[in-house]
Amino acid sequence: MEKLDHIKSHLATLSQIGENEKNGFINLVSRYLSGEAQHIEWSKIQTPTDEVVVPYDTLAPLSDDPAETKKLLDKLVVLKLNGGLGTTMGCTGPKSVIEVRNGFTFLDLIVQQIENLNKKYGCNVPLVLMNSFNTHDDTLKIVDKYANSNIQIHTFNQSQYPRLVAEDFTPFPCKGQPGKDGWYPPGHGDVFPALMNSGKLATFLSQDKEYAFVANSDNLGAIVDLKILNHLVKNKNEYCMEVTPKTLADVKGGTLISYEGKVQLLEIAQVPDAHVNEFKSIEKFKIFNTNNLWLNLNAVKRLVEADALKMEIIPNPKEVEGTKVLQLETAAGAAIRFFDHAIGINVPRSRFLPVKATSDLLLVQSDLYTLVDGFVSRNSARENPENPSIELGPEFKKVSNFLSRFKTIPSIINLDSLTVTGDVWFGAGIVLKGKVKIAAKPGEKLEIPDGIVIENKEINGPGDLSS
Image 1 (cartoon, rainbow, N blue to C red):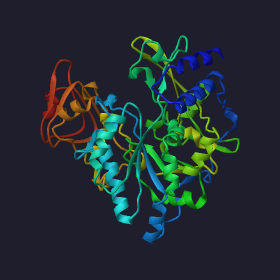
Image 2: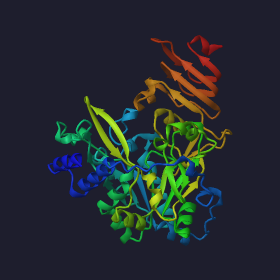
Image 3: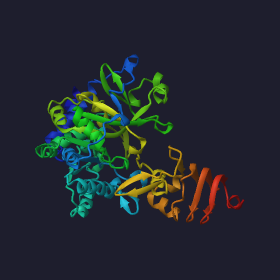
Image 4: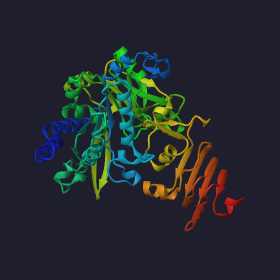
């Protein structure tokens, strides 16, 4: 407990955060220090039944009556997790302001989707953005431009916790790091207390809102689904996690299991070493968490007030300017086991379309997708249900470099895989089919000419283009 007292005495000197956040942080640290991690007994893990993880196509059809739909939508709040920066894609500011397609950003598309819902059904679904201290100021400026839309936009900040210096557990801001680098946002598991502490939860409950649909702001597939909402309202499910079948690209994603009579999330970090390969296999654990979550707001209030949400703590060690620090985080998906009548719904893959890198941007900007009313949907002309796998070299990592290296985005409807390495530049109107590998020799610039069709080919220099 010495460590805890040490942290508490330092924490008292920090004026940047309020009592709620200090208490939340102490709570998290004391849970971490007491080592209360839930131990999973591998033999007790069971595959969830269709009652627990409901197949999407068994959901009841919707009423044809628009008044019924309006009634349903008036219970809903859409909450986007907007705490992430675009740094991995070479952008400053919130990731949600990266332009995804036709000059529209993630946020533009989200606003368009909700505007269309509100217009079509005459309802009032608000958009709520959970920012971090990293994205808050920029987001407020951006939200201004939607002032004339028919949609209420709320913002609140997730908690701001001090990083801990690894060697002696001193809060980093007390030890030579007073700026932003001394702090961190503690993961999206923080959405529950942050929603409550911000006063937003009380606001929505007073407006008779019952459910929040929570999703990452970079998941283009996470649009409001009335069938899911209808199912939850009818069956009084307090929590729903959308899962989707795993492909080989998703082997690390968390999965849902039945454990001692409850549904819960199993993350790769909780898996004993001896079972990691089994966890990654698609045979036994067939689904993974999309992080599209539906929460009953009254249940959130009850559980936060009772301090009952004790999700697994994810220790995240980092190094900042030569100092080893520790951040303790939690994930929203891990809260599933604390809610009553919690379920998963096994949804189509189209509801999971995250943009994590420029290779994803290539997919969604290409002819593989079309954009209607803010919703990106897949072109039915592609027969293969899976997307092509795309690997772009470091020259394409930043969005600005990516955009300058493609005069226009190639046609990839019939592409299986694309690998690009080196100093490669693409002309306009290029068509890529089958398996394509393009590698510029070190120190050489390789230009792919306008209008060329490349099918099942490996290109290592200009000579390979003409044959």
